[in-house]
Image 1 (cartoon, helix red, strand yellow):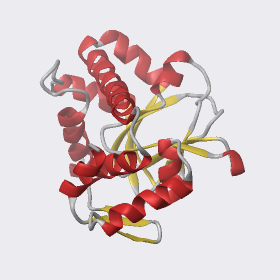
Image 2 (cartoon, helix red, strand yellow):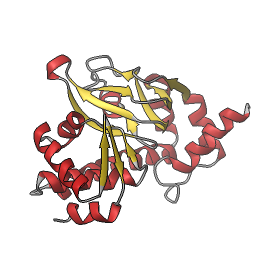
Image 3 (spheres, one colour):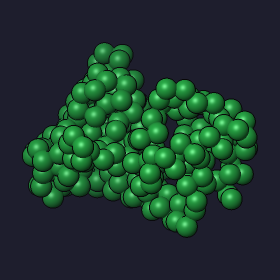
Length: 225
C-alpha cells in the first residue's frame, strides 16, 4: 500500500466517530478502504449538487465545504463544515435526492463511499455501522447546541459567537458579510454593524471577505452579552 493511502486510512481510524467508542481495528479499516475511495476537489468544485441522485456519502478529511440550497438570487448558505464532517449520508440512506449542494471552499480531500458498496459492509460490520452512526449524531448534536446557544441572542452576540467558534480552527476567517448573514439568518446590514462594533472594541480587524480575530477573550465577552 502506498504511504499516502496509508496516511489517509490512519487518519480515518483516528478521527471517524469516536475512537474511544467501538474503535476500528485493522480489519475494519481494510473494509472501509474497499468500500470507499479518496478524492480531491479544487476550490469551487462540488462533492454533490442539490437534486442529484444521492448515490454516495462523503467524509471530509481536510479542507472546508460550503453547504447551500437554491441557485442565483435564491441561493442560501446553510453551513460551512470541515474535517470529520459526514455529508450526504441521510439522503443516501433514504435513497432520495440530495437536498443541498456541497462546494469546496479551498482544496478538499475526502473519502467517497458509494451506496451500493457501503450499505452491504455496514450490514456485515456492526463496529463500522456504530461509528458511522456516532459521527452523524455528533454532527446533529453540534447543530442543536449551536441553535440553542444562539436563541434570543442579539445579532452582535451571534456574530461574536460564530467568530469564537471559528477561532478554534484559525484566526483569519474568510467569510463575507453576506455569508455570515445567511448562516445566522439575519440581515447583511446588521452583520456589518456588529462587525463595526467588534472592530471598534479591538476584537477583530476586517478586510475584503476576511476577518482577522485579534482578541478571542473580547469576542467571548460579546458572545455572552
